[in-house]
Amino acid sequence: MISLWMNEAFARTGLPIAGSDVASRWDSLYSFLVWMSVFFFVLVIGAMLVFIVKYKDGPGKKSAYITDNHLLEALWTLIPLVLVMVIFVWGWVIYKDQVTAPADAMEVRVVGKQWLWQFQYEDGRVTVGEVYVPAHKPVKFIMSSDDVLHSFFIPAFRVKQDVVPGMYTSIWFEANVEGFHQIFCTEYCGTSHSGMLANLYALGPKDWEDFQAGKKIKLDTLPGVTPAAAGAPPLNLADQGRQTFATKGCTACHSVDGSKMTGPTLKGVFGSKVELVDGKTVTADENYIRESIEMPNATVVKGFTPVMPPYKGLLQEDDLNGLVAYIKSLK
Ligand code: CUA
Image 1 (cartoon, rainbow, N blue to C red):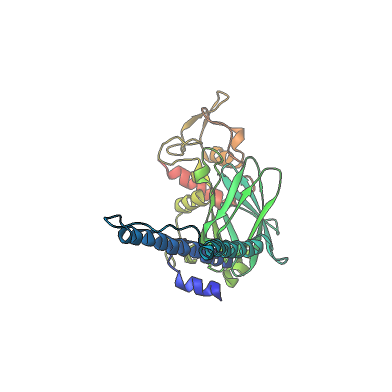
Image 2: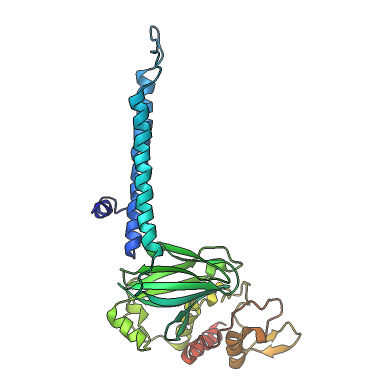
């Protein structure tokens, strides 16, 4: 009840949308802290300003000799004590719910690696850079790292957890806003840390059934997804590839404008002669592009280090075709 009232009263806080129950509960506590601070700021500074004027020194003015005031001392001890205890209990209750996943939560394994997020479902399916979950149902992410420390963050759900090599950590949430939500890596993990993004799609019952049946989800009609291209003609192969390129984490390390990032740029690469670390030269044709995606460490380009994770088994044939067409189009 109190929490509901706080939400209504302090809805406009400038925070990202609250996409889960726990998010609205954290926001209520946050609003409480902000408004309590505003209240005491006005009270203290206001009183100070009044006293400056009222008790200004002047001829004939002499301040009274004050020793102590037990009532005042008791109040300025008790009131802050009550306030900090309210903050503690409020935070503790939400935290307890946030770290205790319901037993019936759907489980998804999350693997962080430089520099992408990989998701592994109970049915064996694997996705990279995007994860599909049912809305309005508890979902638990069991997370581990392939290399260094990462941190998994879904701002809209207000959940964040370190992802540590050699052990499992977990988060859980219940998405109550369907559609797209951004995932970040929020622990500096190397060159392309800022590009270590992923998309979370909270699906309604119909879409979730389709996903479980192995159908491709029409993302452009989901809420929060741009561009809203519902009813538009299907994308051409190169544009499909451009989408795959963006959603599978490729943009973290490869530019398409000629600039050097962690990996080589893909501008003009197709059909060109590529110099490898072992001194050999190969022509970048369809099979070279394919191999460089699926088993990138087989042919490392001169001037680069073999840091790209292999995508073998993570991409469907139609995804690969799109990617090759897209790279071909980057003249
Ligand atoms: Cu992974 Cu930062």
